[in-house]
Image (cartoon, rainbow, N blue to C red; front, side, top):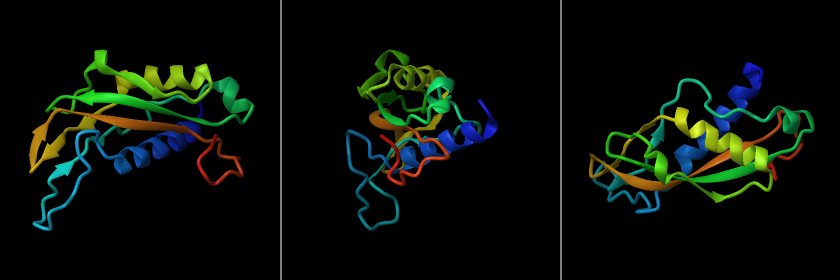
Length: 137
């Protein structure tokens, strides 16, 4: 995959990660400066998700929603990873799951203290020549 395609998928992944609340709380800020709950944040310097070449060539798009669990260090607990919502394309689902081993996160925090948590992580596959501004299928 070209670096442009990897970068696009990574940017969409990173933005989605930053905007997703954890399942255990909704990140309400009590106004005291430190949010009560902060979800995990992706820290990958390189995109971990690879757009499947066949689907890329056909300009097929989709979104996979993964359910991940990270411990208090931010490490993903591999046995907990699940597809919460499939894309309708086995290749996208497989690519998202394959990337989990390379995903890195800063841990979630509750009142500033690192905690383990489960959360939903969308992985968007949007072709750069797409005219759909809504994020794909």
